[in-house]
Length: 221
Ligand code: PMT
Image 1 (spheres, rainbow, N blue to C red):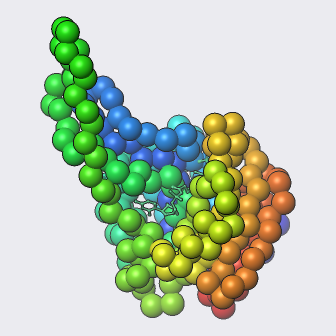
Image 2: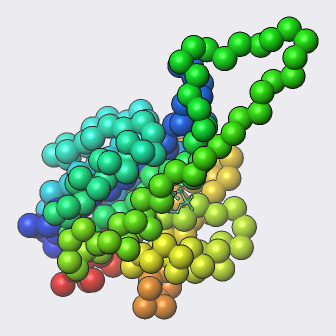
Image 3: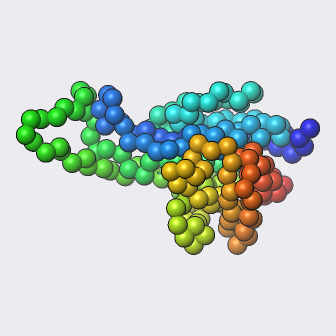
């Protein structure tokens, strides 16, 4: 059985991808399935933690013994994460959060107009939830973990992102149309604010999740 090294701890995990609505039938979204975040939630529960899983549009079954909070947009994800983070020992942001959302929401379906070019879509910034939590630390000593989905210059971009966001650990994984998103397996390097680099070989998303919890557990001790 798993070691109960997270017993008595409350951990918050975000999973899935936000959807930013344009009108009642359309949204801007991304390819996250939620599998990596759900694997983090399952493994934390197996190690004894009380787990709150903030799930953005994931079509996956609720993991046993985990408190699941479904959300749609980045703004909803922020509210749910901040609420749960108030008494959390660790916050792990595995969700793919839209950096931008459409500036306006059309109450009725947007229609083609004969002979006219389509209207451009204007975007506005979404809140950066990871940077906000890493900066404020809702609870003293809280460990804050981010994920970085990169397509190139993975390590250099990851190190810059870790510093910009101010988190303790950043899990850098490479993504593509057929890589990581929706897959059962992942491969990553976990960067630490202490300068550490922990390579995680290609394997099940649970194996990466366990390595993340090892690093979190060490920082909580
Ligand atoms: O769900 P799967 O199909 O299993 O795929 C897993 C995954 C690829 C989605 C996951 O492993 C992953 O990399 N998640 C983070 C994706 C992402 O949004 O990366 P980013 O580089 O855009 O963001 C960096 C970090 O900031 C992330 O922790 C993100 O949650 C957070 N963020 C980003 C934007 C924003 N407005 N607020 C945030 O908190």
